[in-house]
Image (cartoon, rainbow, N blue to C red; front, top):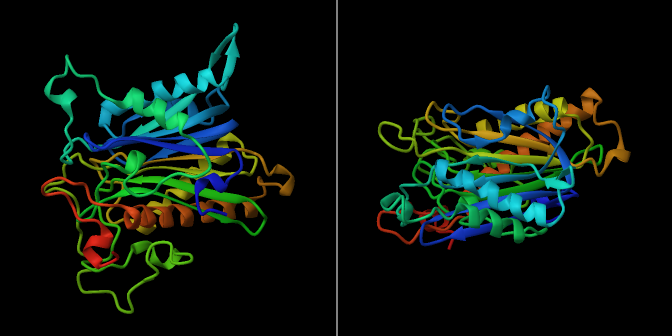
Length: 340
């Protein structure tokens, strides 16, 4: 176990970055496809093909989930990823033509100090996201960088640099569950002004500093901190949870609903009017022989572990991040709290 979502059999992940523009993309590819669904609880989402993931829709499998910076410009990343998937022969075949399905969610990182040339010269300059989606898909493997990497490059939270996080765990029934998240939250991942993470109660093996929860909650613990005064459209935490269990689309929908609780465990506030918090859930079915995942007890455990994994991944993404090299950039956790 690498404590990454790629511990789930059939999941590969790749990152690509444009450090000058302070943005990037992350692509999770399902080797052999996966059943998937999605839940969006943020009030201002940006996405591609997510309606097809509703249980009543016809298409059953997806080939990739793309997480990207760039707001609406970032939606080009799925096109680049789809080109790679097609070249690799992934997807369904219709009339001799391979048609892969790459669904996507985006986050807003357009005002983080990076040089977004396409915003200054919208006709002359092309956004980099098609290329980032292609490069991330080409880089997909069983290991990948966390923190200021991929879709987490331009991510921020209230007061600290955000980033890309991932974790994994085993259920008591033998299934593997993993989470992948780009933490660009409207709220804070830490408690008050201190170093402790809201997700501290779920930490494993010191994966984000080993501080747990404070012995006593500080007086400012419940003070609401968010980016921008008033809140600007600079948020959105986008994530994928995956399992090797065999699930239907309806069961993946339930898994996504339960996994969303991981954002509530790790961020405060969350699911705000001007963010687009979105969580995908995918099942590769590689461990179907272990037992019946449709059993309500098994399904309940899968959802609970997925929520815990997502909470841990949020904290890990912030913990592993490094500050952007721009004036007035937010500090990273280790810089602020002496982790390096």
